[in-house]
Length: 349
Image 1: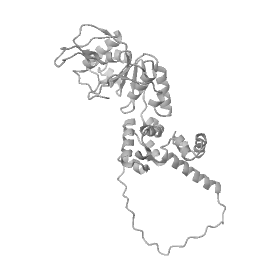
Image 2 (image 1 turned 120 degrees about the vertical axis):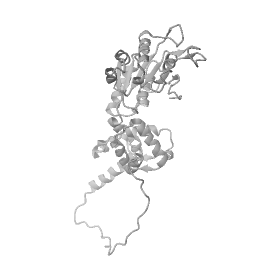
Image 3 (image 1 turned 180 degrees about the vertical axis):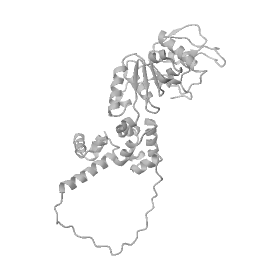
Image 4 (image 1 turned 30 degrees about the vertical axis):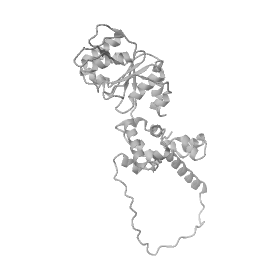
């Protein structure tokens, strides 16, 4: 959001591929991208449901950017962050002198979003009397500024989002059922990060895009596995913060699972103190290698190859194409070897 009241001014977005917004190749993300493509070119209202930090506004921006209104304004309003006495003015605008402090005419967000998209975040927090006025605008396509005498036609696509259970809010009398049906012509569910943990390497690469390699840290294979095992109560927002924290603390370094635990606040700092070496009494001299039994050369080579693949994936933050470059292999060859060794049991693509 761009202002202290969590209101976006009108933004004219350049058309961008949906994949630039919705990162990841997990099944839930492929399904979400498919749904976004299906609804993007329609004008039907869309309600996006999902936990806090899961990326609901990113989905809203993807719908706008992929649709017919992409070259028009995108306006976002956080309904839960606007003081109750100002929400009507923010949405519909006001005329000069409409109330104390209204020293000039204000254009509301419905007018600012004309021909474009209005994103109403945390719609479940909107007070009940405003829900009635919002429903009227959605039904009539007309807005009246506070203190005004005329109704102005608006053509706006509404995308809303909430982390609340609106069906329970309806049952409790806190949310209008008719508004729920009007806003939720299409319902989209954004998965939690825990539901798509296999996307973590791609999300890390996305968050570090544009930075010089010396400015960000690298996550080795064990670190990626540890991140994928985390329950992520803060979802993608939490992961982004972890990556930023890692870049500050470990820029230019490759970190392991222990460092990930430090970043997550689950481990005490590791002390770089070398223990004093104790004398080893009567240490036996190294024995020459014997050939009393056959050596499984193929197994040893495969073990080395597996270790190198895991190390490369760690240095590449799980991005297969980059790991293949480090190993001087074709991407398809690396994928075949990962399948051979069962590395794809923890998806790093």
